Image (tube, rainbow, N blue to C red; front, side, top):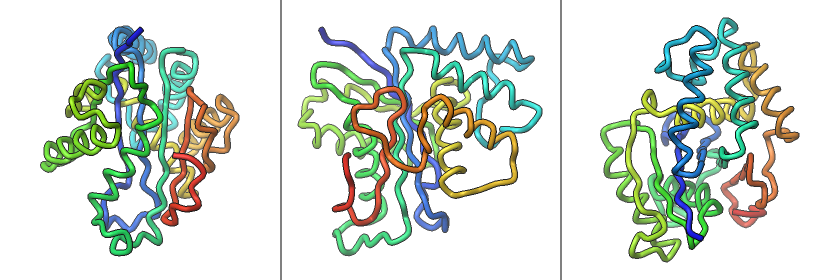
Length: 238
């Protein structure tokens, strides 16, 4: 029986000249018919902690004053059976675009394809939502839709039905994605100094049983990680 899913994507450290060693992409997905219920549940958690229902969850906003709230949000993700996460950690040091006849944008689309491809089942339908980042977002989304559909042989777009931009402050699932990829980026770049952020990373490690610096088995459905290195021949799975 065919099912419909929403996939919510976000990215961190993705610019070509940001001088950061890693790019992190993330996707949270859930059944389409559960999306509203999940958003309402997240807003209820916000209200319990004295926050407005449309307070935007963001990794950059994590502070000691709100650490209990963010820890409850992380626990909600792991306790909610209909929520799943897939993350890609891509090392940017050592990239050689000329060797592979590509530019940074082409590489970026490839990474998004590696992020998403293990989520798709050919009998299901997917609606993908990405946070608006810049004025180039519309062109990037059109190209990403083309790349993913072509690689999945979904030329009629029967599987990946739609990819569209959304504003993160309006979509709780995008906010959850931002929080998790922020934790992955912070931990894999070996940053320190923010105890609240360290507490969130520790909670994710506790709930997953993973170190968050290496990839998981491809069959992992709740919290799946893929680590990409410039020498693609060393990649274990995609």
